[in-house]
Amino acid sequence: MGLEFHVLGPLRARRDGHEIDLGRPQQRAVLAALLLAPGQLVPTERLVEGLWGEDDARWPKDPAGQIGTHAHRLRRALDAPGLLVATAGGYRLEVERAAVDLFRYDAWVDEAVTLRCGEPLRARELLAGALALWEGRALDGVPGGFAERARERLAAGHHAAVKVLHDLDLALGWHAEALPALDALAAAHPRDEEVQRLHLLALHRCGRTAEALAAFEALRERLDRELGLEPAPAVAELHARIRRGDAALAAPAAPVPPCRPARPCQLPPDIPDLVGRAAQVREAERILRAAGASPVLGLSGPTGSGTSALAVHLAHTVQDAFPDGQLYAAGETAEPGAVLAAFLRALGERPVEGAGVDELGARYRAALAGRRVLVVLDGVTDPAPLLPAVAGCAAVVAGAEPGALPADAARLTVGPLEPQDAYELLARVVGAERIRREPGPAAEVAELCGYLPVLLRSVAARLAARPRWSVADMVRWLAERGA
Image 1 (cartoon, helix red, strand yellow):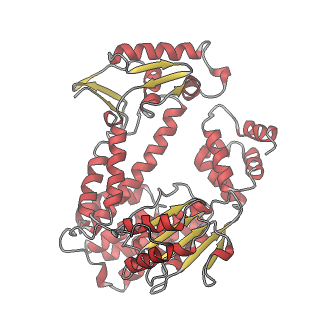
Image 2 (tube, one colour):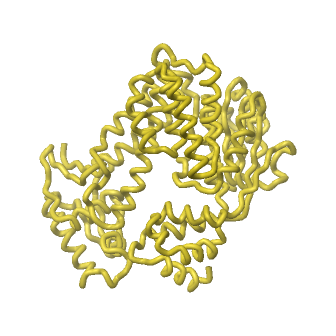
Image 3 (cartoon, one colour):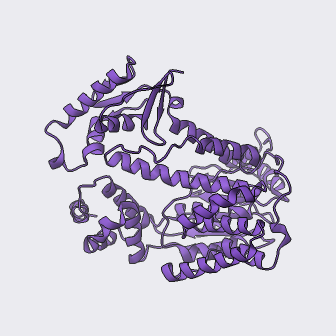
């Protein structure tokens, strides 16, 4: 069995099933930082800042020496020669990724997402197994800003995985089993519209249609009162279908059998804190959900406006309308022939060796015929050969030159955020209380970033990593660098 480490809950280490005493909290914080980057050099400076912050006035007298002491004690506790290695400038933990529960969890979630469209039952089994590895709040009790940031990131990922699990439950006809958990999840996340959508569907399928309709009305009132928004089209559409008694909403009578394996799910993870794009999202949904068409939606805007993040978010939002898969390609150097060959392989086809772009394109569109597939292209110089051009399919193209898209393509311009949205983004990343204490400097930060979300997110992440800095400190830092 050897050494095993657990970070998805209180930090623990076991050797052959026996618990190891990892010592005092700061010692555990050093181990946590090394475990999250197994086999990689973690600079001493990063360990010091992760434990005591970036304000060196708050550091102990000899921070590097204290890190060395913690490392020495960890070596003794772990009793594994060569495991914790000190090198010039930092430390490295020579442990296999499979020995850390986090990386087993990540691998199972990745495999589940890949199988989600084609083998939902197997995907559900993998996802349930992954979530069972959690034993509470990640790194519970471990001090320091590094551990806190890791906790927030892991919690966001856990929430996304739970939503996928319940989506699979409903796809498999297990609504009665999922409803108690969805009741609790909907109460805990009243603004999460995907959670609310799953809850409405589960209520309806369990014969509690009146409660589902009432829950939708409560959601609509809440979103209008708190955010000035209407429910997302996916939720509104489900509500309309429930009201008219759409028979297609009925649950499958038995677990869904494995489908064709060629149902690609290539989307990158959705961004957890997208703000200020509600109007564009709703307009994009209207375009992409157009029945019987093959819409192409182009997103354009200045550098830093977040067209890439918005494209991925839109794809996740309308994923249910494209049950046969999602294809994704990014980068200015993406060569059409290579991308088409990769798309064909993802669709279960074998591209002909040495075939030209025209032949590959014809085979690509033939493979898409009769399917509903969404194609997302980000920063691709020549998107035209990659567009599906097949009824029922659609494409979202971010960052392409206007002339590179078809004449009938829909276009949305993505500009800087409104000041209040920039403030909300800062609050989400840095922490609402910290931003609320300094509204003036927060407004200056937003202005210095041009209200561009990519710059705002970068600056906010830097500020979040420096818990001892004030927002005014960040304003000075930006001013010194000519931002």
